[in-house]
Image 1: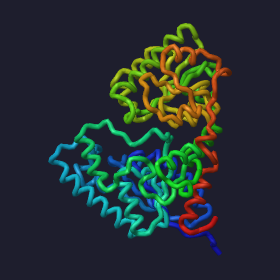
Image 2: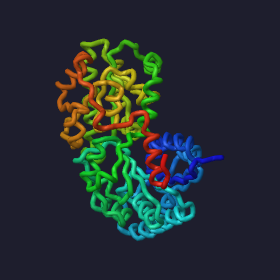
Image 3: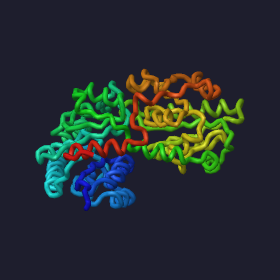
Image 4: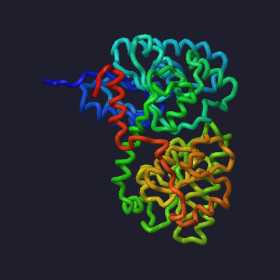
Length: 414
């Protein structure tokens, strides 16, 4: 006799479909071992999904719903910003229609739990509200690094802000965690502190780790440094510094991110002239690849044998092979600490990374090219590896912890 609980769980995906799936897939795999599980995938992305994203969702979820906003307004335009005033009325009608579609989907399938990774803007906020009206408990899973100085900020023009307000007209939430979810799954103590700072009671916040980092730890353990170096075309005994870039749209002025990347690469090329064994490997964030070509960063990388542009390896493979790491504001800092690699944040423009990112010593912050040179040339034995324990718990076991929390919210004890 099958004594497994029968559950239907709805997973909400934003524009970063693959990123969300990296969190959801380990949870689903674990739940399938102890539940009769039906999975619903709900896309709320502000752009139409690619065919690869459609295929990924089809392979994971039993039932999918793509954002109807994309198919009913501006022929699936990938932008909700830069709207002209005469478009606002059309936008308003489309948003209302989209929200009704989501509500009907939830009413039809009646999930036991709704899971989101963002609760600050529509349509996710409207899904949460629809679920609450239907008596469906909602779980917010921390999706990225959080620091208590980081709130929802926008450098968009007035018209763009109005457009974003129209799209999220029913929310009004400024900090992640204020969207009304019944429970919140934080990565660790840092995330829990963030949510309590946002006004959540500690009893509503569970420290469950990050399922995405479960997968990362497995990839890290299985990485082959020799093979990675062969793919990159560098010698295995090279002094390997990894630069992992990330978009800084919310905290950097236009052009500052590219300027900082250029400074790092130019300093690395200069250092390599006195240190033939030195190698900088640049791992761009996928969103930054077009700007690398547009603003000459890719060409700068190709101008020196001391710099390698890495497109064909995972971040786990790159970190496993590296001796030291440079980031801006990125979860890679935490991944570097878990890999036992010294890591610094380069911050030449005094960006607000959030005090917990640097003050708790997950990472040191450098601001000048002189400090960069010292970091490049210092023996890795004298460099500091960050302590990840404040930021992450249940490493390698997070999917199990989240699964237990979902079962509890659905009324089952595991």
